[in-house]
Image (cartoon, rainbow, N blue to C red; front, top):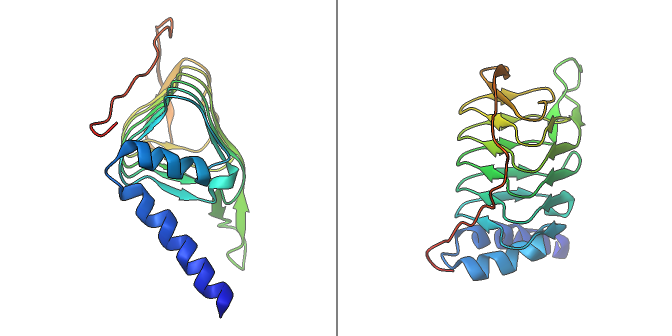
Length: 177
């Protein structure tokens, strides 16, 4: 019974911290939730962490509202200057559709530096998104994305090549910073 109460309190803590309107307090709580967090990274309201101890986030990264970051099935590594738009789901755990018993299967997800993930994207386990790649809105990423590639669709396929020197540094300024 005691374990259930402690677990429930931990769950409530993880749920409500993401709705604190003050960015400084939210970052303080996130630092206690994830494995590591780089400097000047920003998290908007409603970001959900699942097993944050397997999640690392680099410097100058912006994670928009209502993003789900899953670390239950493997490590989730997000690089520097990454822009993840709202309502994106990044999974490291899924069910095996070929298993008779609906068994879980997982894999690490790596998002390298300068990646731009547009809104409502789904990234599945075992994927690496290469440096400077762009994932278009509503895409479902099921396999690795090469560096500097633009992908879109379901499943995500190459639709272009990014032409940028990637010399920017993301500096999001939340209202309550």
